[in-house]
Amino acid sequence: MTLALRDFQIDIYNEARDLVRAGEKSILIQSPTGSGKTVTAAHIIKSAYDKGHRVWFNVHRRELVKQSVVTLSESAGLPVGIVAAGFPGNRHERVQVCSVGTLAKRWHLLTPPALILWDEAHHAVAASWSTIIRQFPNAVHIGLSATPERLDGTGLGQHFGKLVKGPSVRWLIEREYLSNYRLFAPAGPDLSGVHTIGGDFNKRELNDAMQRSTVVGDAIQHYRKYCQGRRAVLFAWSIESSQQMAEKFRAAGIPAEHVDGGTDPVARDHAIEQFKRGDIKVLTNVDLFGEGFDVPAIEAVFMLRPTRSLALYLQQVGRALRVLPGKDEALIFDHAGNCRMHGLPDDERDWTLDGRTKRKAKSDAAPIRQCPMCYAVVSAASSVCRHCGHKFDIQQREIEQVDGELAEVDVETMRQQRRQEQAEAKSLDDLVRVGTLRGYKNPEKWAKHVHAARLAKQAARDAAQWASGHAVG
Image (cartoon, rainbow, N blue to C red; front, side, top):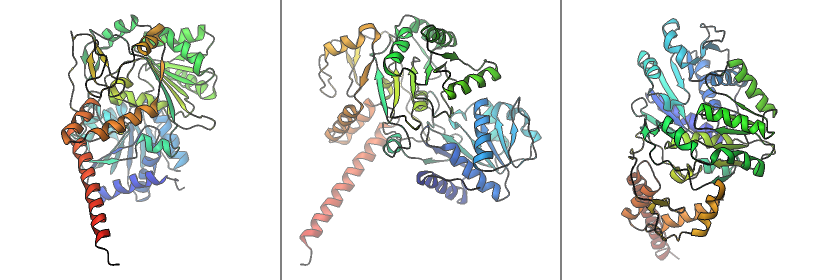
């Protein structure tokens, strides 16, 4: 059986293959959520299988085991063994789909593979993953991730030597490989006093802070207003809050169910199947469905969980971007205001293996406000953004805060303003400032890339003009 890959997936496969042929043994493939990384991985696995090699495809959650087995056995036509608790296995098959937690205890019972693929490879720094990686230094290791960095922004260069970049989210949307979207966001909850642990908010302090906010009732209000009858996934800030939200949806006459890592596997699978069929309209969770939840039927995402992690933000909004017949656009309700920290879901991002510079959280700060155009933080008393000149609309701000109402973000206007902002940054220092305000991982590198591209274009124009003036007529 031959897998039908899209052109950009073929490009990813060819680049990874050429690196392996050149002797590279640790490669990370970056491609956005919904771009078909598992299908690309299946093509890589089938190619290795056809050459007689043993291959492991390692995942970190039970749902991903099942999805991967279906893709490899039904789409690629491969005989597959399973190494995961609760699944029957056949350790003699040359292709194994493995739960990392189970594999960490059973790897010595299996024949060593020539190739190991790591799904959601931004978890590679975890102890169980690192243990397995160290046991097989002679195997080729290929990681897959939409967001190749840890939650705290640390890069993955410790485990992977080369990065293969897939297309951007905007590129995929323009070609209808991903769904377009509408984004709604508030001014944001008050998280003063909430500290950071491991690159993200302290969950206990976050839960206390969120209990003081108005988001609990807002999700139901906005579901009724904008997406009545559509299937939505809601990310809450704690298991208790997720359970409460499911109860509130049901009380409002909207079929909903809470699931988490401790939910009975049979009950969890049943809830997911009901969601796929449309019997359940809302699935509430904390972080369970942030990664690898391959259900194109998701039409809306509700984010009630503030996060400092760009990776987690993109993983969660990406759940709604998969295409579906009859689905005109995805609806993203960012009740936590994460987009004001991390930008738009389809902003251009220059992923590297180095990660981002860690930004320290500030506490006991004076009252502030954030510019909706450039995201710069200025004094709350400011009437004009000192960075980009945007005039704050006080009346609009008051309307946005009434009863926790979300306002739709004018994505195209914001995108045009960001292009203009970049065009007006004439010097290299100006570009570095823009990149810093946008929260880029490496603003200096981004600025140098943009500046070099400008110089190259100018040189090309000068050369063309010179050639035109000296043409033999």
